[in-house]
Image 1 (spheres, rainbow, N blue to C red):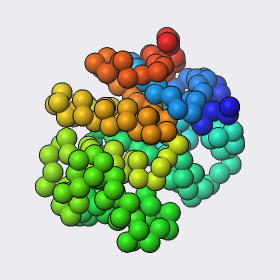
Image 2 (tube, rainbow, N blue to C red):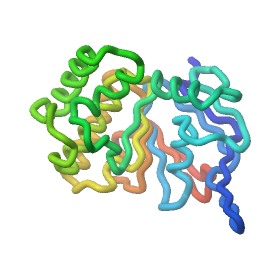
Image 3 (cartoon, one colour):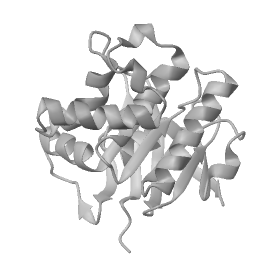
Image 4 (cartoon, rainbow, N blue to C red):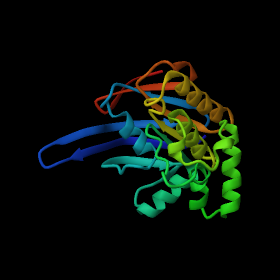
Length: 225
């Protein structure tokens, strides 16, 4: 079976006037359909950059990146955005909800960007919000929700377009343990529903959820299991 996304000798370097930082160095990695992959490592190890490369959020400085077997080299930013919207959903540590839009509108946004009509997109959003226990928050603004509720809404947004892969970057990092457990359980449920899940974390509390893990240090994979 073709991996849903893969990297071959992928590198990403960040440069300023005086400093060059090797965030990811010649990493080869395949993400298989249906797995729950944890990317582990200390702060600054390159975990988030690796996830951003997998999720088409950062350009490659070297190497090859494929989505469902197709090389992404040469694609324009608009083409990459369309590919992200088709195949991927994202959950970030800081939620990234649009503050002046209702929770329902936030969750519907990936479908709206695909050209789905507003009423159909909102109906789908309501269904996902019900699934994460937030149907009653459909018309609230993000600021009216707790941090845990905002992150559950972000999970609903990631799931609404039935993505092949859900990428989550430290999704429990700004939450208390109870809210964090609830978010991780939602991601595990998304995998049971057919999605592939890739989670960046420096915690091992939820290690049992992973079907596979890798450890990143100084931009390279140093261990896996």
